[in-house]
Amino acid sequence: MTPSQSALSALPEEGASIYRRAQDYLLKLDAEIERLDKVLARLQPPITGRVRVVWWKAGEKRSAANRPALVRWVRQGER
Image (tube, rainbow, N blue to C red):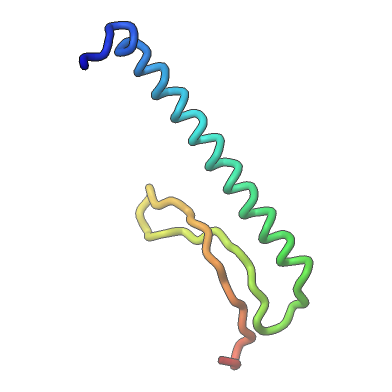
């Protein structure tokens, strides 16, 4: 079955709509990750074993994006 001309003309608009929804969703996820880090920071004392979520720069390229990373802090000299 071949799609109609009206269905084909709506594709760019539909694609843009899907892109905007995905972008909004990802921005909300980023905000929730930052919120989680704030909660972890408040709930844990500053001792060895503390867990935080940080934004880690992936690579040295100028275009490298920051990515969330789970970090377990350890005092210097402890393993």
